Length: 234
Image 1: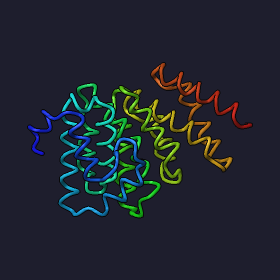
Image 2: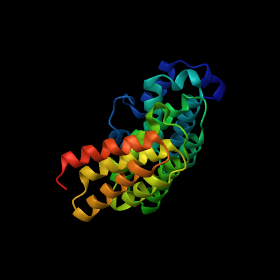
Image 3: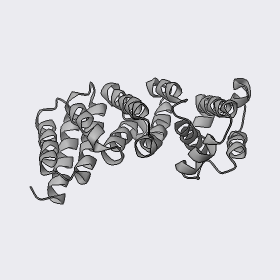
């Protein structure tokens, strides 16, 4: 389906092509089922689906439809590593505001790389992608930065992501990224088993609550600190 046809396509026609190719409703079908079905396709068919999803998201009218956006993001993540450059390109887009909804949708599924990928290089690439996003983003539109922090704190292997979150909570360039890092640390605290690690997270949140130059970040860190203090004994 050429770009000009995607621009003129309806939500139903895009979803119909995805669903027909993968023989399932891509909007509601679990990620792992979609990933298994993609593996069975010929390389040419996989490339066609990547182009279809990319072009559907590029159409403002289509990407604001939840079903199209979620299905497209899910399929694109399931197409990793072939889709890595395309996803990276999307995460660099900062306007219009609706692209942040696409970012949020990607972050809802990129954790699958940590859970299922046997490729160390792919996990490293995706981790760096999310880290880079939080390090530079100026906006938490559509709660995309929040979701990126949630991905790293609640869904990624903490042996890989915790050091990233500790650095971002104090060192991201803008408040949105630091707030995302703070949220990630709060989620990570609930998963950590070692007291020394819990103490490190607590200390990082305390620093952010006192010395971050942005009131919004200080408040977020204080709230997170209050929550984790009430959830676990000191």
